[in-house]
Length: 114
Image (cartoon, rainbow, N blue to C red):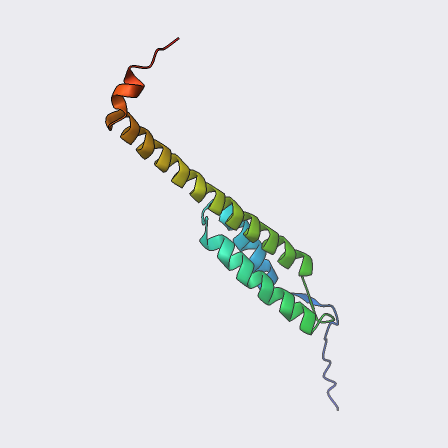
């Protein structure tokens, strides 16, 4: 009696782990990991895209990787804008404090108010 061993292989492509991780990190950037999530999303997104380009018939998930990249780059941009806003506010507060208590304080305090 002979045993037939059947090997079941699917030809369906699998989704890239790096693409899924990129998307999750991009979302986590806005939920709880502000800057770290964006960096991880960008790095893993580019890794996923290169992995998908090397074997497009076996690995899929380019749209997931692109979504993670977009979320990561937008998160970096928003983080930089927030940082600049904080710096401008600090300079404004410090500059205003110096102007009102420094040598020009008499000038500003004696200005007519309407």
